[in-house]
Length: 65
Image 1: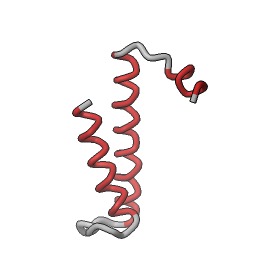
Image 2: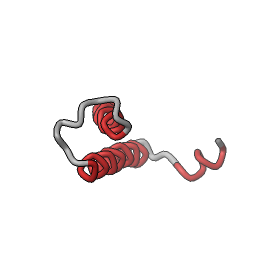
Image 3: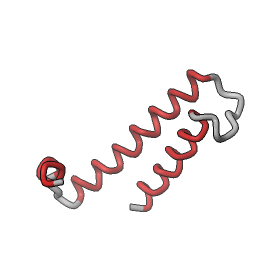
Image 4: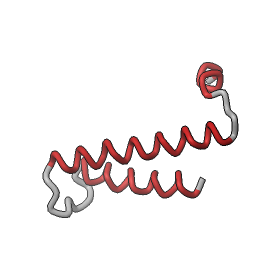
């Protein structure tokens, strides 16, 4: 859970840069978009690791929502 929390924080920072609400750290728009995509992938990866570790039937959980 702590790793997921860390990754969500990094995603938040990348999102804020993407929408112009945080400094761009002299990154190009393409680099900002790539960082945002990479952070989304990191968050999804951590969620999937939690799913596997706790033996959650994610398809059923999503369907029941």
